[in-house]
Amino acid sequence: MRIAAGAAKILLALLVVAFGMLVCAGKGAMTRAAFSRVKLRWNALIAASLGVRVRVSGESPAEGALLLANHISWLDPIVVGARWRATFLATSEIAAWPALGWLIRKSGVLFIARGRGAQQAGVEIGAALRARRRVVIFPEGRTGDGRSVARFKPRLLQAALDAGAPLQPVALRYRDAAGAVVTRHSFAGATLLQSVWACVCGPAITAEIRVFPPLSRDEDGEERRHLALRAEEMVRAEVEEK
Image (tube, rainbow, N blue to C red; front, side, top):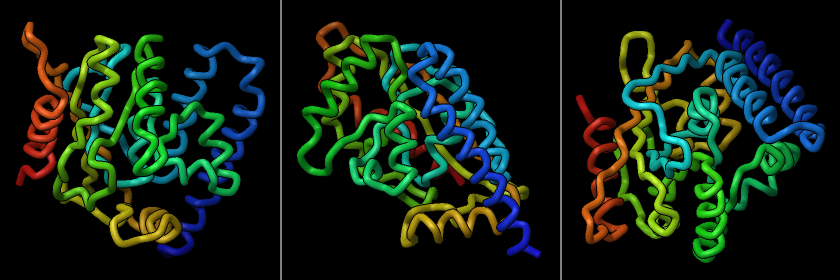
C-alpha cells in the first residue's frame, strides 16, 4: 500500500512539475509580479501533492531581506517558497540536472560554484536585495539530518551588509503527526531519488518554519562573522530543542 501511495504522490507531483515547466516556458510573456504569484502557488501545490503541510511561526520575512536558514532537504526551498515570494541560492551542480536543472534556472534561482563562486554570488545576491527581493541562503553550506545545525559560514552575509538589507534567521524542522522530528527526506547519506522515495512512501509530515526578527546592528556596524554566529545560535536553539 505504501508503494502504491508513493507512486500516486510522485505521479501527482510530476504533473505539477510539468505545469511549472509550461509556466516557465511562458515566463517572458508575464510580468515579474505575475510570475512570482504563480510560482508561490506552484510551490504550494508541490508540497500538497507530496503530503507536506507547512506551518509558520514568528514574523513574516521583510521585503529585501537576506534569510539565513538551516538546510535539511530538497524540500526546503519548496516549503519556504510556498509561503513567501523569495529567490534562493543553490549550488551550481543543480543547474546541470536533466530537465529539473532547466526548470530551476528558469524559476529564478541564483547559483554559487563550490569553493570559488562566492564573489559572483555576492554580486547577484546584492542586486536582488537592492531590488527589494527576499533572498534565501543556506549558510551551513551543506545539508544536515534536521536534528542539529552546523556552523553558519559568514562570507555571503557581506552582500546584505553592503546593500543595507535586513538579516533574518530562519529555522526549519520536519515533524510527523506525533510531533517527532523526521529525517527520511534529508539529503544526509542519501541520493535525491532515495530521499524523494522515502518521503513519498511515508506518512504526511509537517514542515515547521520559524522566522526570527531581523538581527539588530549597532551604530559602528557588526562584522559578518558575529552576525553569522548570532543567526546560527538562534536557529540551533530552535532546531535542537528537545
